[in-house]
Image 1 (cartoon, rainbow, N blue to C red):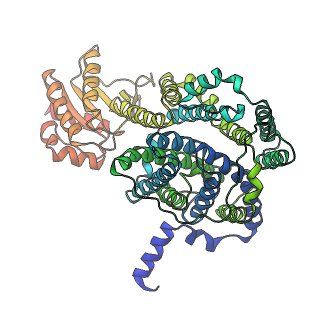
Image 2 (image 1 turned 135 degrees about the vertical axis):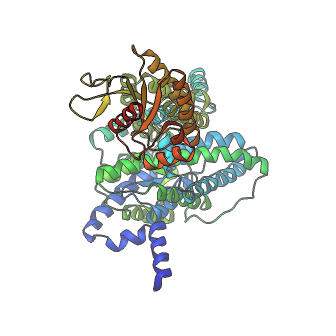
Image 3 (image 1 turned 60 degrees about the horizontal axis):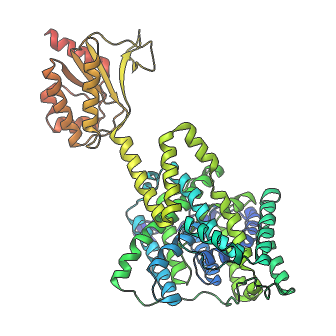
Length: 570
């Protein structure tokens, strides 16, 4: 399409659909690596997809549907070259625990609610993309993620102890499940437990010694052969059962009542946050490792489209998988073509090979989940937080305990709240410093960190290392006055250095007027230095220049002091 409109449309499409930009520049020499990586990752996607469907209390085939549709969507809309989208353990268990509490009409009702919840996750992500909210993920601190991932791993493991022991009926949160298993150990099915423990041992050994080998798929196939040619099923070893063949089709269940939709909205919101945070964490880590740029806002769109596709195709909530993405990177996947290979392989499996998995033991699926989530347990991260910051360690432990005590949904929500409170605590009590002049120079540095810096006679220089706004204005004023009052000799001038305060709002600007009045009562003048042009404009607009004198753009402290000395001399 020629002309300016055509150019704008082409640019918009390139931005919305990144494949239009990277595919024409695809290096054919990468194809062999991408195909090999795609086949290797598929060997992990198949058993994990079936296992995570069981975690989500959904039919096994829905895990394959979700994997197929998510990877296909990410080929077109994703910006990461290595990340693999699909079901994840945390999303599956959060979905089961939260939607299960809303469902009241049995399996059909539950599946319908999973559909609408997954679609809502996609809608939330697309809306967030429209408003360019990708930056919000950075408000969730590493300490919260460390605590959440560790708690989620333990919680997910607790859900698999029942299938591993062959004990039915365990439900509730972490401690309730453990209590139930502990009081029903007599009901353990020995063949089931032996099979599950053996699978765990082989999977762990494979991850340790042969990380690139498709150990999970090999264990699955071996266990299927074992159940096919022995009488273990008659001894009580539960199997997955028949998995229907064929590709996913568009199915839209009946729209639930408004009250149920209202119940699903916070669940979908939590799933959206978890999906995006999981995915963007893997995306940013692999982009740094492979030295290319990603677009956090575009990843909102890819998350939205992947979840809409998974929901409409009969799957469930999806996100970026760190374990499968790391495997893709380790075996040399170069581009999103790997995801296309995975999607193609899943099509073959769904059309021709689902019958193979009929005799797959549920205990082996439990073993796959347990081993897969061990990577989420971040003990080294907890130790680092304990060593570096006791407050952040406390936040991580609080989120971990919240997941175990209240469940995954409340764990996510409490983690978000603690992240926001952590941000508020930091911005409302920013780092401040009293400055001194380096002898022989015009430079002012923090006196506490630089003993060689000397105070200027009769002058007190103060700096805030943060933007100034309503949340920290009062704290800063009180801190400055306390510091001035603590000086052995009262100064005649306070210079507020704004060099590290790139922005200011009206409340903070008015605080400077109040500060001027407070200092005047102490017979101390106030001046500002280092003001960014935008900050200086706000200060002039509220009339502060008429109160304290000239406010120059980015004027150094030394010049402000010289002008004050001239004014007082005159």
